[in-house]
Image (cartoon, rainbow, N blue to C red; front, side, top):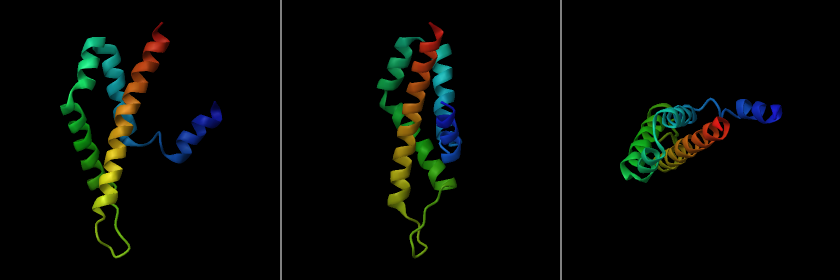
Length: 104
């Protein structure tokens, strides 16, 4: 277990702001929302668009990727934004399930 935690810190996965945002959202939802409200949030398409917007802004402002010629690489940033949004949603769902697991 300690090797797994060390791997999270050495790879930088735990230090990613999208991961921290997902953890924070999961904690807020697990403590303040009912299961019906959580289900309604994850069924809402606007939630996913908001997460994609936040991930896109984060990647454009802080994690710029350039091509070999020095041009801004839109495709790489778009793919990175999509995977950052997926990471945010998956981490929030895993945080909710973890809190529910330890609460019983």
